Amino acid sequence: TMSLFAGIQVAPVDPILGTSLAFNADTSQDKINLGIGAYRTEGGKPFVLECVKKAEEAVLKETGETIYKEYSTIDGPPRLKTLTQKLVFGENCKAIAENRICSVQALSGTGSLRVAAEFIKAHMKPEAHEIWVSDPTWGNHNTIFAKAGLTVKTYPYYEASTRGFDFDGMIKALEKEAKEGAHVLLHACAHNPTGVDPDDGQWEAIANVMKEKKLVPLMDSAYQGYASGSLDQDAKAVRLF
Image (cartoon, rainbow, N blue to C red; front, side, top):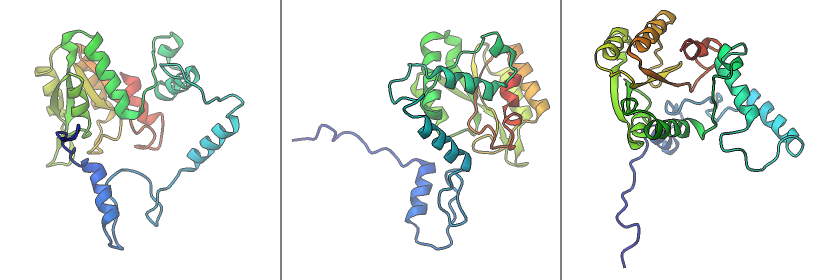
């Protein structure tokens, strides 16, 4: 008899994770893994940051005292949301003080983007169902948004000839092509995969164009603190918007 799953095709290997699989299978003694962006020791082994060790020690110490392994609230622990808001928007953020920021915990970056996309599709007006992403962008962005039913379009971002930011191309696309009310996905810092970010003046210009066109920013902040070494510096774009 035919298997229930006989007609299911095997998904293609993820291009980023596939690089790591190829790296692990390579027998060369001189290999260097340029795939997933993660810290490694001089010996090529995963490097666990000291702050991560200390955080896990603190969690373990409080487990059973103030931390319990029970179901959390659907939108995430209240204290986690408060601390996260201050991390992203700043300790003295006026919007936090005025209770104008709503936070929800989701499963990592991919899960958060999918939840956001589903919310946009289910609860926002049709014009918001169009989302503009940079060309190029993180490999999963387009698929996440498309699978949630959004229309994905791209704006110019990387200028190969200069290995820099195509500021004029992006501004032109947002001014001339993006429809009022559409979403625009922005990388808060350490743009993936180019590593090229707008400077402060360019961020202000992007914000002004989006405000004039009534475009809705969806900010993907995956590397706060890793681009410049400063949590505040890397949050400047988010706080500007």
